[in-house]
Structures are given as structure tokens and as C-alpha cells.
Image (tube, rainbow, N blue to C red; front, side, top):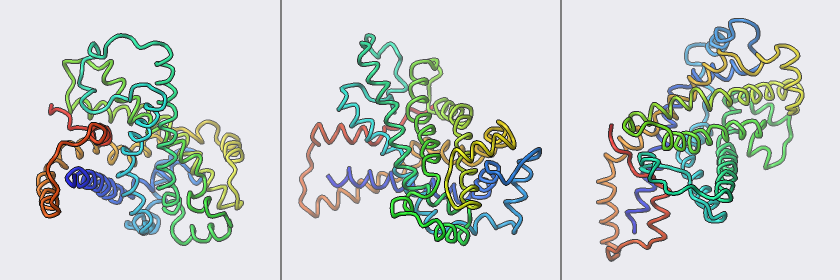
Length: 341
């Protein structure tokens, strides 16, 4: 029916618009994070150096590096990231014959309802699936967003010059330089959001304390203190690799790692300042998505349903119950709202 398709489009577009708006508003924080995780800041006071570089050309300088490609990439990144993971999770679960990752109302169920212990073979397949799915989801997300991130890192003019000098092929140009580091970072964040957070919350969070509010804060905590702690090292590798590209005209992860360790040691890839700047950039948009999805978007679903019903009536489509397959795919692709706190 038209209503199902309309709701999918409405919710996906809503997530994309929300994510893109927050990323644009927080562009100064992103530039601070990008500088803090590059070789352009060294020694002590790295966060101060990053702030100074961000605003060296004026208070609105961070917004001048945002092109149309960045706006589109932000929209696509947030509108498809959940759908991509759940689609891959569904396909791999069917292919491997194992259960899907916990999501939506399942997180509020008591662990005792999970049934008997699964056999070792099923546990192994589930582990394999939960390792593959975030990698594929992170790669697809980077395919959408990495080129625009590189553009924002360099600035529009410098990016065009480097691209012309690099002479990359069609696929490499579409994905952008330092793609592997970017995809690895996104895979870590995807695993944190869609595998670790729901699994740990469902199985180990006190049942009497489960609510939409505690899930929000638990997910935000996992984002800040688990996912971003690992992702920050990959973010630093990405930034240093781009610096290598700007200086030498080629991408070399090995050279970026060796140069960083030689000059700064482990601090080249992880410091409290790097982590804090990364959290400032990543947590606001990604951390508020559950609240926006479950609390704000449903407010507009009534008019969408009514408009879709008018279209169905005009086309002479009879109201009928969806097939089990369509119902299952819809439930898996669009998580139900969580209970209020």
C-alpha cells in the first residue's frame, strides 16, 4: 500500500534532514575535530591550536568549506545508515540461518524471554554476521560521505587542486582519498550503535530501569566512551593520511603511521583532546537521533497516512492486510517506537 511506502520515505527524509541540519550547525566543532586529529597540531595545547586554526579566517570560516556535496552527503548518511545495517543484517541472518540483532521493542524485553541457550554453531554464525554487517554498512556509508568529508577537510579550492593533481580513477574519485580509514571508523561506530549497544542493553541493563530515557543515555555513553575511543585513532589516521596526500601527492597509511609515531609517539593517534573534539563533532547528531525518531517524527505521521490513503482511494486500491513478507520487512526496516520513560 501507498501508506507503507510514504511512511518509509517520510521517516528516512526526516532523519536525513535532522542529521544534516545538526551537522551544518555544528560545523565549527567538526573543523576543530578534523584539525585536532591531523598533523597540523602538535605538542601541548592541541585543542587550543585546533580552535585557532578553525577560526583563523573569521568566525564563519568553518561554514565556507561546506559545499552542496556535503549537504547531500549528510542527508544521505543519516537517512540510509540505519536502513543499510538492518538490510544487511536481515540478508545475512536469512543466508546464515541465525537470529537478527536486537532492536526496538526487543531491547525492553527481559533476557529470560530469550528462550533456551542457542547451540554453539548458531552463536558462531551470529558472531560472524555481527562482524560482517557493520563492515558492509560502514563501507556503504563511507561511499556516500567520505569524499564530502575530505572536501570539508581541505576546503573547496584546495580539494579541487589536490584532486586534479592526484589523477585518480573514477571509483577512487567517487570514494575519495583515505577511504579505508574512513570506512573502518564508520564500521566501528556502526557496530557500537547497532550491535554492542542493543545487545548489552537488552541482556545486562537492569530490567526495572529500562525505558526510552535510559536507552538514550546508555547509547550516548556507549558512543562517547566505547565507540569514539576506538574510532578516534582511525580518525587521526585519516587526517594524517590526507596531510601526507597534500604534501606528497599519494596516500600511504604506513608512512602516515610511521611519521606520526616517530614525531609524537602514541599521542599522534590518541590524546584526551583528540577524543574530546571527536565527541563534540559526533555525539550531538548521532546521540539525538533515537529521540528525534521516536518522539518527533511520529507527530507528523497522521497527515502522511491520510495523504497516502487519499492516493490509494483515488487509484482504487482496496485496503487489505499486507503479506507476511512485506509486514516482516517493514517491521525490520522501521523499528517501532520505544516505550516512554
